[in-house]
Image 1 (spheres, rainbow, N blue to C red):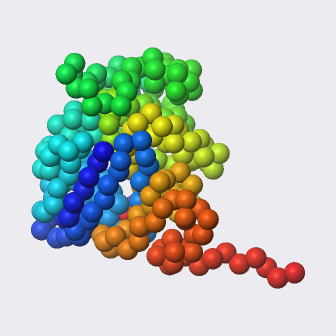
Image 2 (cartoon, rainbow, N blue to C red):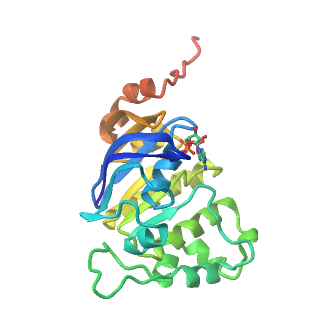
Image 3 (cartoon, helix red, strand yellow):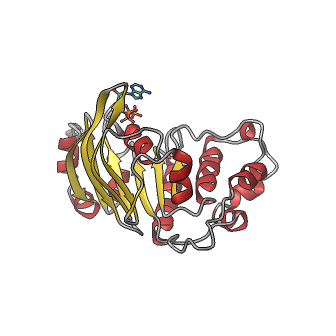
Length: 245
Ligand SMILES: Nc1ncnc2c1ncn2[C@@H]1O[C@H](COP(=O)(O)OP(=O)(O)OP(=O)(O)O)[C@@H](O)[C@H]1O
């Protein structure tokens, strides 16, 4: 379970995220939607330990993580799939997997499940077919799978996914969202930054709208699926009108 309380953070003394409360229970997906510049990546980077919050707290399964550096946050079980994937151009898929494999310590029983390279390849068979290919030779979808594989190899309790479908064809994006659901069923708490309110409502238990670094709406995914009006209003989206015949 990930718990953020009063989280406040920004850059160079300026505040981007304001007093944010958010919970992601184990085995669920919490989606964040918001316009460009709303503070979504800042939120993810603050949880991941790249930005030190100026106030508030980050807790992982009740353990205080606030202000811990990124490598300690990762080791404690918060995995990150960054925006833009960040795979290494010169390394093969197999090398990425080998370098990313970080089994939790023996005493750490808090992880929902343990991931090995073999198990990751069972989940993402396309990566197995491409195991000898370098980062530059992979398609956008394959790079996305590899970024996800790298995060899973830390056997995370919490997974932070920053726009994992950016630049992907709709069919691939749908597969990624299905995968996110599978990972939540495994017991992982997933915090998902989504560019699409419809997809967010489709796969998340809870959807939060962030506007200028503040929570402006929080809805059940199920309610937003039935009636997305509140979500669209919070995002100031104009409904698509069908032409009169
Ligand atoms: N490294 C940085 N230094 C200073 N300001 C930054 C930095 N990164 C982001 N910002 C500012 O913080 C605000 C929030 O940016 P952030 O990237 O978190 O938004 P976002 O919701 O993820 O947007 P996008 O959907 O475009 O990725 C913006 O005003 C942005 O200009």
